[in-house]
Length: 342
Image (tube, rainbow, N blue to C red; front, side, top):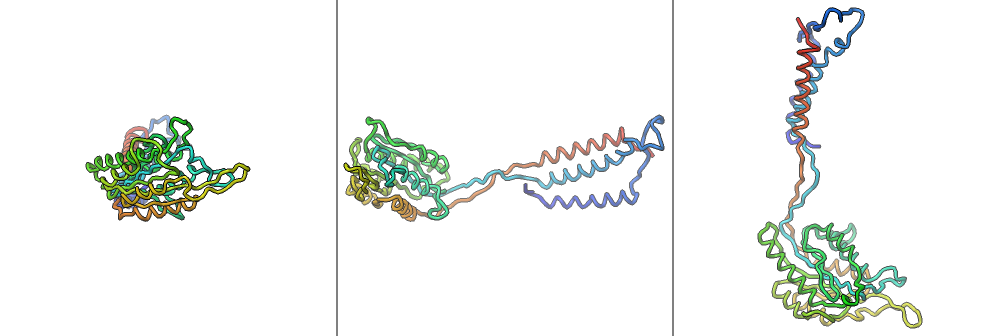
């Protein structure tokens, strides 16, 4: 707990003065008012024992009222206000081929590796990345159809939670790789968000799409290159990642490593990046994928403007109320049961 006006505690210096004055006999002690039958010189009554209670209640009331004047407050949470940042949409392939193992023992697949790398990119860690707390980040997944899993947001804890729920497509009707449709959806979400933010204090400094796939476009209504030209018109960079990493088991039951870039349409992904001023990356291991995200993190850096403040709750009233209650109780006791007479 903190105090907004700590100088008010100087008023407590009067307490020692009052105490010394009373000890010196400056205050008339008087005689307790009691009925004659209750007087017993050989026995100290409860009333006599409590004769000083109003005095101490008054002192405690003074302490509480002075504490209230010092304005006690408690901060509950830090709120970060961001005024500038980058808007980034992650477009992630979750087709069945993303279930290809990236470890020889089959313990992890491509989708597992991508989810972990993206979460580190967003939230950061102590060793590799700081995270992107000031940036609007969204998530779109696709197979045969594109889907907005998380809108562009500064609430990255929620984004991380959504990312962890991503599953491989199991339905044959939904399986496929519609790169163009997914990228077009990402462009639309970025443009829509930018228009909405023109009415707010947050300024989108730049816009980017990170597209990750392990295959080739084989569905959808919009071609990947048409989607790239659409992004170019709106000033959106596309960073493309071909993730052809993994292992397979051959006809003899032996585990073999998949050649880098196998099954990935590297030519189209490179063109998409070139059209928009982005860059194409190829990953064949989990570590190389993490390194790619580190590179993109460096490329999409700006000087952020932000400030933070805390939500505070004032505790003036509880202290003031308790102080006045004790003061009133002291007065009532002094005027009735513990009344003194000359």
